[in-house]
Length: 299
Image (cartoon, rainbow, N blue to C red; front, side, top):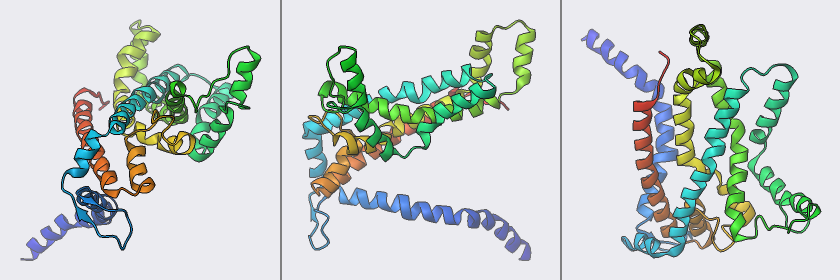
């Protein structure tokens, strides 16, 4: 009997260690998800004294019929595709081609790359709003000096979305470069030395050794960009454009926030959140499967 108790204690011990984390996830993640799913079937204006009216699938049907919902989904895709080069491709190139920098040049490079990452997003948004102001912003002052027409980067439909994509990507370059630089520095030097002894060129080493061994980091940052790219842009939409002009910069995250806290249509907001959660869950599943199959690890 005592042996069985000892075995039970050993089996229970790991669960006791992770119990606080599991409880925190349950309270702060899964419980709100369940509440959001339930709210998506009700009509409610968020006021405590206002009754909740059960409407079934009416919230989902209304959202699907709304043109702005289709615009938001399309813009969400554009945010992801636009941010990807600056969150994955450019940082990967920077990490690969600056690995041998040393001395003062390395310090300057690191400062220029990492400063945007440590600045608060609200400060970044205010800074870019000042730089891109159509009347007296520094960018338009330069355009005027060079003889070009002033551009309303945040006011004109043709420029607003690409401007927010650039701001979001610019903020992420430092974080992604940090990940790639750390992964690149951890590659076993013996692989590189053996390749050089066999006559491999610099490009062959990058293509055949560095890129395959960096594939876990590439897949990780690619997955983060796909799942979180449009979410990272939310604060810039909220501060700089409010989804405009003419809904050209809104995305699924800003739309559900606007429904929930702008018009107090909690049912629509919850339904939009459920649609986003289900859609990105499927994407995350396929990304994880692809990562497990294609990523190369140095064992």
